[in-house]
Image (cartoon, rainbow, N blue to C red; front, side, top):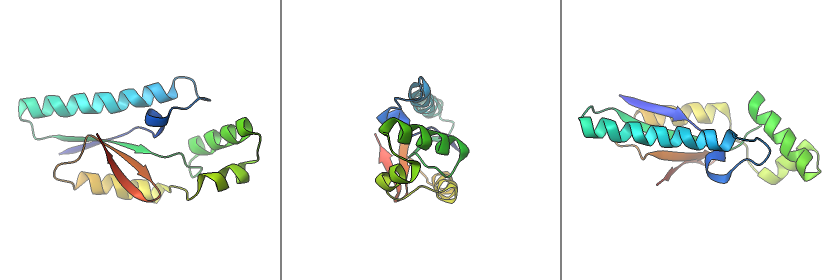
Length: 121
């Protein structure tokens, strides 16, 4: 079995407009790593990986954050999005989850952006 938890890129880079969000998402990453270690110690064979997607306006939550960051920067949403570059899509997130579920030995955590998965330590 593989358990894929969904965290956020905010766990790495922070999220100054969202209070405790980044800390909570970092905890998801830690708890996933702890579960992986316990599975390994008990010989359960259950694999764990945490997925940390970049900010995207393609979801309601992401659009709210993008809107907030645009306002913080004093620009409109379109200008802020142009600064971000390519946008991560829900289909890309789904494909990444499927890829991790099929990975024999996943890394503990992966950053996910429009260019794909990048393993983290």
